[in-house]
Amino acid sequence: MELTVGGRAVRLSSPDKVYFPEAGYTKLDVARYFEAVSEGALRAVRDRPTTLQRFVDGIGGEAFYQKRAPRDLPDWIPTARIAFPSGRPADEMCPTEPAAILWAANRGALTFHPWPVRSADTDHPDELRIDLDPQPGTDFTDAARAAHELRKVLEELGLRGWPKTSGGRGLHVFVPILPRWDFVEVRHAVIAIGRELERRMPDEVTTAWWKEERGERIFVDFNQMARDRTIASAYSIRPFPHAPVSAPLHWDEVSSVRPDQFDIRTMPQRYAELGDVHADMEGEAFDLTAALELSEQDATERGLGDMPYPPEYPKMPGEPKRVQPSRAKAEPEH
Image: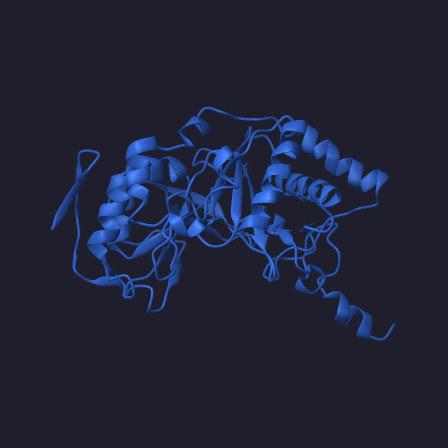
């Protein structure tokens, strides 16, 4: 069958194929969902190199991440050249119209992972992303409390954040920024913001990279701002039984909502009533200077240097050893 969105027809094969067995949702249900929220879903990925998380046999089958644009990518979907941490380049799909979302959904894409850059400049992020990740013993309510304090930190630094559910237990806060700083600098800004939040909520928030040091606190995952690390976009579907979605929120909703109330059945109604509640992100671009000055203060006044990168990264300048503290203590001195 064909669906038409944004004036372009998109072919949908096997519309009755079940993607969510427990809820009974089919590929057509997924496509209809993305059709209903198409403008918001596009806003979150427009002009961004985008990795697709594909579930061609539904959430019960094997999933994979498609980073490189497939050979059969339609000529009306552009690509953008990005560079991985290794230096190897790749061309990723770069959606510019809502039909691209449906085209990807027909290929089993449920979750979209856009880079925090635009196609015109893929080395300088225009979006600062903060991932508040509940650790064992904490939940969404704890993340919400941290998010409200985070909002204050951002405002003091001249920044404005837009919150959304992760689609799981956590919260994401996105900040549109001027594309003046590279990935290393923007990651340093997130580390500084996370450390300031940790200082204000030491019993509830942590920036500890090693799990053994986090405790029952909300982890500010600063490495989600490293090159080639991405966060599920707004309106993406997450691979859990009831088909939850990453839901954009107003700040006054953060403490009152439950993440499981947003799924492919409920979000279209909310969207029809409220529209894309993050639409006003477009056109905004904040200055990161104050956050980078805070990072410099951490280094010079508090002796706080860089943090470990993900294990697949090449060794980065100024990075501490990538060994968990318990192992480091166990190793004999030489």
